[in-house]
Image (cartoon, rainbow, N blue to C red; front, side, top):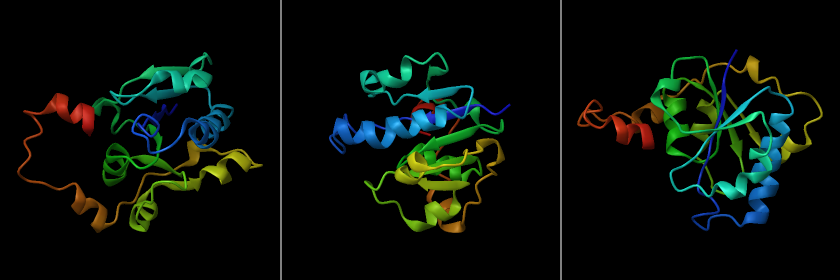
Length: 166
């Protein structure tokens, strides 16, 4: 069975989105997904304000988590928005559902490379079940792959840093 991970972003904490919009576009979308899965892992950003996720955290099927490189190559499904972690997961051909919040514009080549993408409003108003288990691996195009190639980075010396920012 696939594990499902939502990669949290500091949208409210950084003032990029007010809390009311965040609740409408993010929390309600995640609640919709939660109705269709047995478990949802929230991978908090180090600066995440967990209280804005309280509507989700009170559900016993939601697990507080931190992102780890150990989650790669295990047939997991990752959900998220505008995030370096999400873009890197797409470049690594992981299964990624990219949710467009109609807030931070994301280049089309990233949407085209993701496994699947939906707008927050389409997800919320969706009448049919979203079958996450049928999502295929991302197909990163060369433009996206080139964003994450840097021969000067020694990942072995910076493992903890990569666990945090990957």
